[in-house]
Length: 61
Image (cartoon, rainbow, N blue to C red; front, side):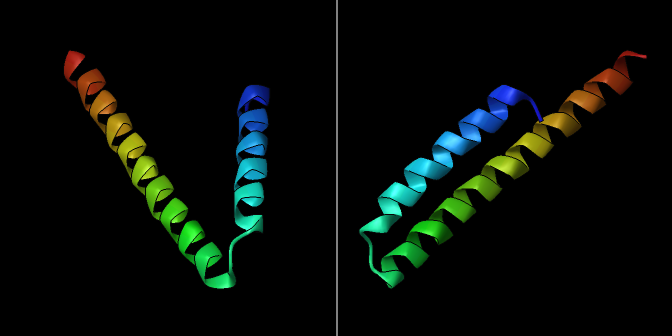
């Protein structure tokens, strides 16, 4: 992973931990669940974009 990516992830983690520090256990659970759902959606979208790029590449041959 690129250095910039690792640094960005580190900053995000610090922000999330800071935001979660004042929450109740239930609120933290909801926060992390929502973050998990959102990041998984982004992951799936990135995979879909890769598949489309691969299809376009294969069609050009």
